[in-house]
Figure (tube, rainbow, N blue to C red):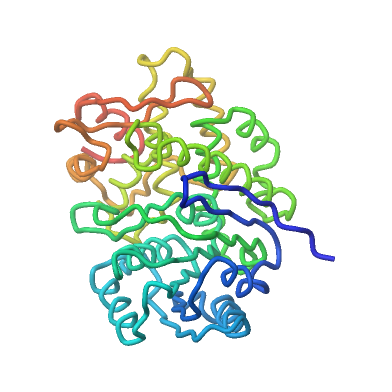
Length: 371
């Protein structure tokens, strides 16, 4: 008998929703989605790599639950988070005459989830959407919290909306189809949660990081659950970043997003860029936060390396300080013209810190970004 999934609630008032984590969830996707909706018309969106192994299961389950359902296959890759693909989803929703009781289902990684979520947020000023994440990265990060959007030439995720899903179905069986590089990439966000809010979880990862990366069923399920627990707590307390608490989720992201943008989307995986970003933003604490010592930084860097993540920018990307610092100026956390970084104060806590280009430059150079 299959085990019941682990369940978490994201507490956002009358828009609260559940995250289900476990094996075999796709085989009951139709009935679980039907339990949350009124209408029976749906669009399922997945990229070309995901539609055949996983999207087809969701389609068949929705049809079995009585839905009139259509599918849309999008290109794989970060470039798909664009106005062009957003318009194609709108066009399909229009041709389907999908009304306010219709639903949109995102099956795949963070690119699809972000794009589809924004389409759902903007169609008819908001229709229900469901997240069916199939990558480790999307299970622990992008599928939870309601941030949706697309990229702009000046920065990542600059165009979007807060729009919470009705349900998140994280079927750990789907992770077996991931290439190793994608599994490793997802580990960056898992490790992040330990640094920003849960030192005990970080310590557990130090004993289990290889088991999580290699998809041991018990270890990876726990890692996803603990990561989502932290994110649900933060989102529930500061859904729209009005108090500043939610910004802690961006540890490593000021530098990481700047690297992604400078390199060109797709040149480096998101988790790889965030790993380098955490190394840099961790080192920025030296001399500023006495509770974050070289010993804590060493633990972080050792854990990232054991997960298979990089600590430095590959020389092949040829990034310059000017490129990366210019990209960092477009970060969404910036205020009053200052670039802000999430800097650790101790293991389990980070703080938003304004720093000048001059202060940050030596640490970017240490990470392989040339002057």
